[in-house]
Amino acid sequence: MDAASHTGVDDVREIIEAVRYAAVSARYKIYIIDEVHMLSKNAFNALLKTLEEPPAHVKFLFATTEVNKVPVTVLSRCQRFDLKRISADKLAAHFGEICLKEAVTAEPEALMLVAQAAEGSVRDGLSILDQAIAHADMAAGEGPAGGAQVSAAQVREMLGLSDRAAVRRILGLMLDGDAQSVLGETREQYVLGVEPLATLAGLLREVHLLTLAKLGAP
Image 1 (cartoon, rainbow, N blue to C red):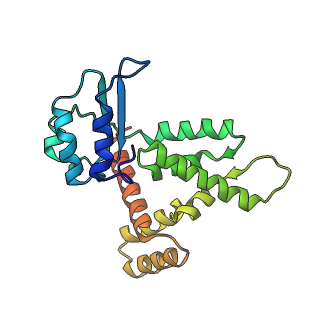
Image 2 (cartoon, helix red, strand yellow; image 1 turned 90 degrees about the horizontal axis):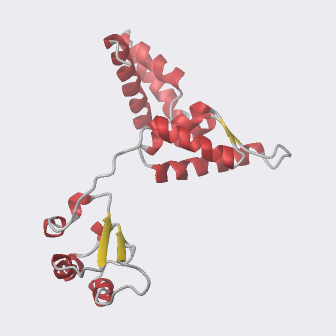
Image 3 (cartoon, rainbow, N blue to C red; image 1 turned 45 degrees about the horizontal axis):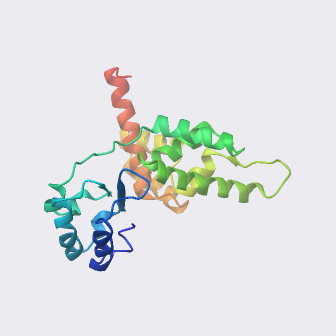
């Protein structure tokens, strides 16, 4: 059940009525409630008694990205599993395999940009990759090439990211203490459509890499 669109007590009551009966052809009945934090307070209260004394043949799976919005009374009656973010390297490799199966060519840097933008989420990354492929198709037209070419420049433009050369240029000006030139370069990136937060994130990433290099970290 999608709790984002089924938030009321009546939706939960349907589940409560159904859990009385065992599965016909399986050992367990499994109810998956996605975005469970969207349930109303009354809906949570209606579900609470069933969670306290669940039938032996029923399992509940609650999925949420905002666990802090789930009432403590519900959390205390559940086993909690926090799924870790997937590293950008693994995501980029996964997206590369998908491109290979879809007959789409993509630059390694483009895949890494998509993976970084996904922030550890495969689902979000696939959505971004799908957009990147659509942009590449539109840029290439319907020629006989038989596949899109996803480039790093296209992904940067699509996501509103600064290219690394511009970020390093701004960082160099900052280290030189040339505030006027920094403002001018930042303004130029803004006019080009680059998000200011993306420029700031790029600067932070470069400083982080410089710090790692200085400390001799891998």
